[in-house]
Length: 319
Ligand code: ADP
Ligand code: MG
Image (tube, rainbow, N blue to C red; front, side, top):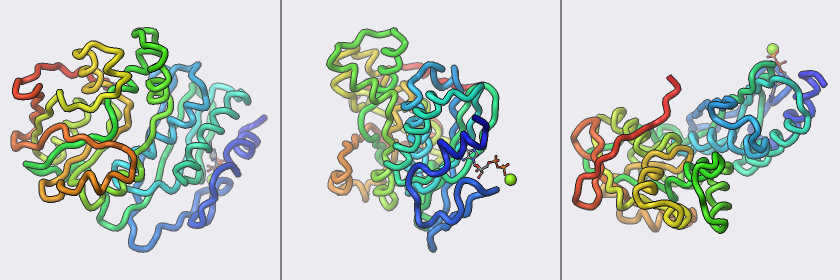
């Protein structure tokens, strides 16, 4: 099987066909119709073997995760995901692997109603790059730069589960049988908070998705917005699986620093806070207020109730 047979078999015709896709896989470029009155939002994420995933990971979950992490960035912007491109670098053509990877990718792309409209296929060390495109009503994208002093800080879902799933996969932590499924699901099959992100368009003053851990990611909002924040670690939302599997100190550490939860982190001005629970209740994902934006530019304070909480964040940086 050569490059073009591979593209034809696995990446040409599977998946949703959107009516706003004029030209898709097979031409020099894709031709896509952005809705009148909408802005195009574009994001890219790369996953490299041994850096982002174990080479022996289930290829189906890898296909899923590649789509989900890209779509999560669109969700954090308040955008509706629409199209994907895939730059695939493979050491060799292994059909069994490719079939599973493509199945996971298309399954998840379909779930988010995203069409794969192009890409590139090359030989080299295993590496996956995806570009996701979405649309948002003009001027309504939620950025990292809009947080204001006094805004309340929220997160969706629970934190630390994916990090615990990674520890389980690496054999670093024992977890009771009844909780293993949950943390593995969270690690291998993260959900992008797409509907909720769109619901926040007229409500959140800033937003981002948590890929590197709350304590590493919140400072991005603080820097871009020129503000500070405090977080009450007693308020961090944790799953029963995390609470039952870890001492409180480790649970807090995973909730603060564990990456790959892909929950949304967002800020809401006081005057839009009142009906937030009602507004967001249809989306089936709880949201939790964990702190507040302050005027101490760039400073993230951690508290446990009224007491200061000391913690050194160990985030991952590639360089
Ligand atoms: P070109 O040489 O013009 O860049 P290619 O020969 O690389 O085009 O690709 C042929 C077609 O297949 C293009 O439409 C491209 O977008 C698409 N394509 C290539 N690789 C992939 C992939 N992994 N997934 C989806 N589409 C792909
Ligand atoms: Mg060309």
